[in-house]
Amino acid sequence: MTDMTENTAQIVKPKVSRDDWIMRIAMIVIGILLVVGIILPLFTMLSKSFENDDGAFVGLANYIEFFATPALFNSIFNSLYIAIIASVVVLTVSFMYAYALTRTCMPFKWFFKLIALIPLLTPSLLSGISLVYWFGNQGVAKDMLMGESIYGPIGVVIGSSYWVFPHALMIIITALSIADARLYEAADALRTSKIKTFFTVTLPGAKYGLISAAFVVFTLVFTDFGVPKVIGGNFNVLATDIYKQVIGQQNFQMGAVVSVVLLAPAILAFVVDRIVQKKQVALLSAKAVVLIPKPDAKRDWFFFGFCLAIAAIIIGMIGMAQYAALVTFWPYNLELSLANYDFDLMDGGGWEAFYNSIEMALYSAFFGTIIIFFGAYLVQKGRGFELGRSIFQMIAIVPLAVPGMVLGLAYIFFFNAPWNGLGEMIYGTMAILVLVTITHFYTVCHLTSVTALQQMDNEFESVSASLKAPFYKTFGRVTVPVCSPAILDVSMYLFLNAMTTVSAVVFLYSSDTTLASVAVLNMDDAGDIAPAAAMAMMIAYTCIGARIVHAISSYLMQRHFQAWRTR
Image (cartoon, rainbow, N blue to C red; front, side):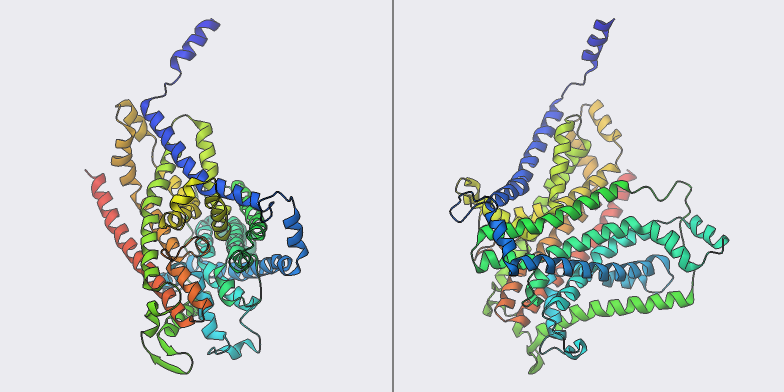
């Protein structure tokens, strides 16, 4: 009887088909690309932190030197201080703003939501530049600081809070949008005060979103380079220390040490966030009732005024940058002209830098979308090969915890290594900028693709296999059309981040591949602040135009998909 059972098990054991082999080989190829793009560079950077200038192993000597140098060691506390203060400010403001958009009946919600997303379309450098014109030594509102200087922690907190605000807002809006009206009806029936209902129902219901937003904000501010570089003055943080060690002092080993120190809190925040998300439970049951806000004049007008104030600040930041870009010579000649847009006369890269950014963003969006979505498809829809799929999924999550400055420096060590022939081919070219951009933003795009693929019934693949149709036909004719909105979102996400990023590419560009965001940095360093503002605004207008194209494409794609389903 045992022999018969064993024979039966051998008979029904699934056979690895040709499609399975092709999918597994494709997954391994993309996995190797991820290893080359993230794992090996990080390992090489970690190794460099234990070596001296000659490449000899020195153990913890570099770390001892780092912690023994007060200027470097204090940067840890400065980074933590800024990240904590900014997190408190952003969480408070974004929660109230999100509450107004989801739990009140105030007018013009669509307008306030649209305005809140503007910082996503601008490089972080823009907020620092705008603050210089508002509160700098010759700023129009410098007296509002009552003698304090904007060049330091005050400016870094304000600038950082501005550009991370929409990141927290989107998370908290999602958390507050999920609510069961029955809980609030029960609170009303028990005559519970609104304040007590807020603390016993509203906050607990949104706690996971708040925790997730807190870790996102903390990590973004802690690892940011753009705002501290422009407005930080002599207030050093870890991200700017890496730049000074590598660019200013050519001390690559100490740069590696600072990178490891910067990486540690980011990884810790990432791990804790993952643990918290795993503990999250479903807040809506099948019997839940959707919460519809009821009009309350005092509450609605209060939050309308609050949102109006925040929207005015956002418009004021980007509006000042645009105004400064048009002023002939601040503050002595306020006549408007386009002279600051003559980038070819400035130190920074000229118009070529702007065109390079568009080229790099298009390449990143095109190749990145293909690689990331197909990789997610292989993980989600592949059969068998559980170990390989689990390893792939784990590697795909790693980039989310790696700051751009750390990744950029890691690429220098890895692709400049004498033994690395790949570096000779791509270092200093557009290819390495595209690779680091795709790698840096891989995780969010991967998770977006996986989420879209999870919504598709696995019966599509089962029917395809039973009809002996190649998997790529099902992928091209069914999966891609159904997931086209997510694919478009991924491509747009890559394009926008490629246009605005500076930290990941600041170490990797050459004279032929200078990017617009780097040009902003270089012009600011050279004292050409108005042209830097003009270039930042060109980036912003490009991203706004891309978002408009995205909205139109999404609408047309939705209509096409509806027509496709009715065939």
